[in-house]
Each structure stands twice: as structure tokens, then as C-alpha cells.
Image 1 (cartoon, rainbow, N blue to C red):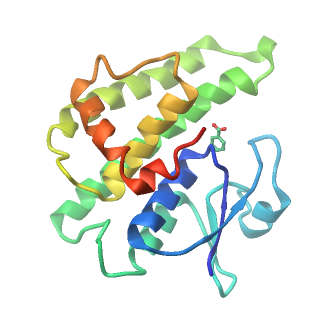
Image 2 (image 1 turned 180 degrees about the vertical axis):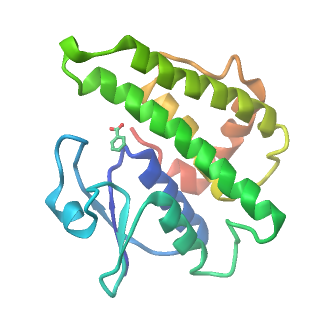
Amino acid sequence: MPKLFYSPASPYARKVRVVAAEKGVALEVVNAPLSPIARNADVAAANPLGKVPTLLLDDGTALYDSRVITAWLDAQAPSPRLIPDGIARWAVLTQEALADGLLDAALLHRYEHILRPEDKRWDGWAAGQWAKITATLEALEHAAAKFGARADVGTIAVGCALGYLDFRFADKPWRAAHPHLAAWFEAFAARPSMASTKPD
Ligand code: BEZ
């Protein structure tokens, strides 16, 4: 069975776990504690970048990053298709990239506060990352009106990104300024795949 190195707090790993659940693909999940300044030897042996998620296939092939793994998972079963063909494919993959980009900014913002020594912190850096998050939430608020009942790698990535904001940035509430997105997320977060992977 493929082995997934993950961290319960990692939103990128959560996206992979949600996609695996939606596809019905069984994975052995291995909790791999790490941070940008503390490598995990098992993960680093499979992925020189030392990042989760990393997926080890049965033949020893390592797959990363999360977008490669979600594409691999989608190819393992014909339905449900989480990355569609045709013109919709590019919109869905771009939405996944947008949600992952929000997370990249959120992680950089968080690391500036929790990892960087206090005398080396730079408020302008954190503000620059937060501006990306604000702009992305605004774009998603407009897009959410058309999300409907879609469940694909785009909406799954958005759900995991919003879940991470709730988890790590509860002091920066986003729902009041983004009511359509909030209403969509309330229903989407109730999917069993999302509920069973919620970080706590
Ligand atoms: C976190 O603790 O927020 C985290 C852990 C691993 C990867 C990404 C985020």
C-alpha cells in the first residue's frame, strides 16, 4: 500500500488525504514531525526537499509535491473525476494553485512569527504575505457563487486552505467579509472526507 508521510497540521497533506478519501484510495499514513528548520530523516530519505506530503509508492518511487500526488490519486480510479478533462481542467488546476498559493503565504506569515528570532522579524514581510491572502479571499468570494456542489481538486484545495486559516489564524476572522465563501465552506466542510481530516 502506498505510504503517505504527513503532518496532521499540514494543509497540503490534508488536501492529499481528502482526495484519497474521495477517490477511495487506501494509504498508509505516517505522521512525520518536521519544520523548515528541523528535517525528518525518513522524509528526507525519500524527498531531498524534506517536505510533507511525500508519497512512497509500492515500487519505492517517491511522489511530491501535493499537486503531483493529487494528480496521481485521481488517475488511480475512473470516478469520481477530481481533475476533469477539457477546458474545465485548467480552471480547476488554477484554482488548486490559487488555494495552495494562499497557503504558501499563510505559512510564510506564520513562520515569520513563530520560527524567526524576534530581533530578525520583519513586519513588512508579514504584511506582504497577508496582502496575498486578502486578495485571494476576495477572488474566492466572487468565485464561490459558482462553486455549487463541485467537489474536485480546486474546491478541495480551497476547503483545506480555509480550514488552515481557521486552525492557525483564528484571530483573523474571514467569514464576515466573505459571506458567499463562508456559506459554501460550511456545507463543504461537512463532507466526511473533510470532517475526518480536520486539524485540532
Ligand atoms: C503547521 O503546524 O501549521 C504546519 C505543519 C506542517 C506543515 C504545514 C503547516
